[in-house]
Image 1 (tube, rainbow, N blue to C red):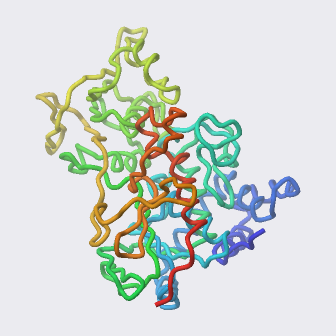
Image 2 (image 1 turned 90 degrees about the horizontal axis):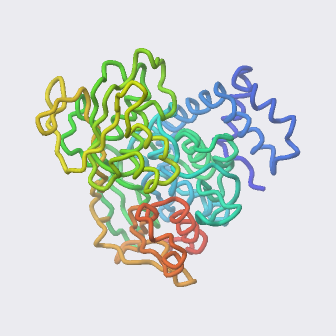
Image 3 (image 1 turned 45 degrees about the vertical axis):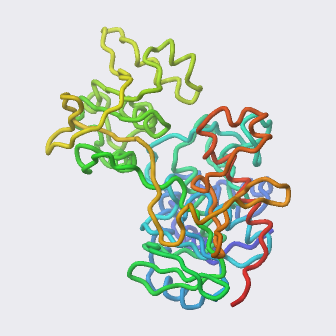
Length: 448
């Protein structure tokens, strides 16, 4: 069993000194023999205790943002180390499998202050995961005993943290953050501007920081940034901006009429928040903070409750009942099958002449360019079994992993029906094993 990293040791020591934060850890330690390791038992206890988890999150944020620590990490690094761009799910997967295979810790560069990717967008729970919560290892949706939220090699798994059917984003975020604390060194506020060749390795340019030398670059930037589509940050918000609002105090205050644009999972989560189906907002009261009307602009969604129950998967079934009038004859949710573009006014959002207190734009994501790492510079990379698991740069020692690698469906995935559902192209249960396979099979970077 791998020993806890310096970061994890420091976290456990800090928690043990604070009685309130350590309460959950002490309780779980009574069942220590049922866990594979003492560290896993301790971390699970911290995660299950709300105060302990909040303290751990704050501790990790402070640890990662320490500037002196960051300078020491960068200056002590070798020119043949692996550098991961992005700190989300696939960064954690690659690093965990890599270290467990006997290779040195990668260095993670995160452009934001908070580590953990999309799931760590907010410190408070704001949306539910798309896959059911169940214990198990890696596998596809039809596999018995497989967990679709499984992170290979992580110190603890999302299924360890809750018994509810669908977990909040913060459960997955905590698992990712602990994996990064165990298996990587992290530098935050590191916005990579370009990657270029340098001998047998790569030179990484970072805004406002000294350049880094790397033996290999792993581009793990996830699904990309939201397409703004007229968002102004106040009356017209992207999904990310709306989730950050939902993490604040009284997030639905003053919102009587809201519009949501887009038909994907982000839009569905935004609608859940407006209907009160998402995790409970902080200090929100149903009697005071309720959206009266939601107009949902999406071209490919059912417009009636009956159609919704037939066509939409179980995860979002609760939304469908709002497509019909309630006992008072009021229908809060209406799906309008047309494409629109909002206009941001100072005190409202405008769509086709209708004004809204808030418009939430969920029309997809796009990649933020990094010089030298555009998709056209990468070719498909196959593992020993012949399946494409990543993309490899034509000239640089660089790989793309995760959703933005755009890995094609395999013949097996098509035969099993995985390819029949378009969103599965970027689903974690499909992309995580591919990232793990890359990490397990690559040789060490060539020394310059």
